[in-house]
Image (cartoon, rainbow, N blue to C red; front, side, top):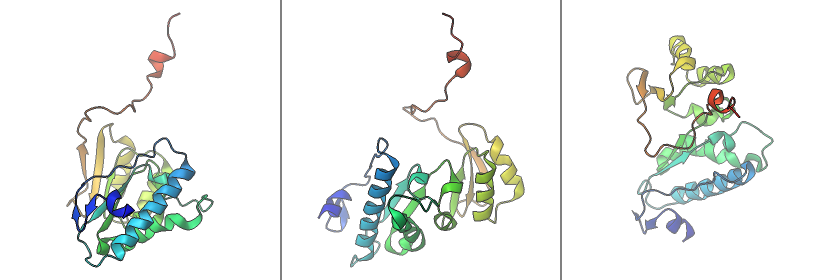
Length: 192
């Protein structure tokens, strides 16, 4: 009953199309536990459903390096393996992942290897670039060399959704998030 209400389901129809769980203020251990437990419960519900694929779920994992990590020293042990299972088997049950992270090198290689499309903003860290090269063998060196110089508010998309890797400009957010860079030259040197 809890999962039915949580997912906005009434019998086999959706009452709610979007459910947002905001764990922004929670510490990493709490985020790890909640995301793993809820994801496992949803996956098991879909897997054991009489009518497969009647209400697809697209799980969007923002700041995914917090809970789909390659770090074996996580507090909740191997619980984050549920994301690897969803990435590998979820499609046949109607469960999909959208993984977002600023540190792809810290993410599970299994999860990333199952992704069929990538939207990449500027990446300068050599370790992250190397990781992208490993998980996407079809990407060329020319495209990888472009990643550190992608302008702000632009991204590179490649994978099954596009014929050729393409850069595009992301629309302006409205309202804009409170995530601007600090203007150090203006804020540091202020006249007294």
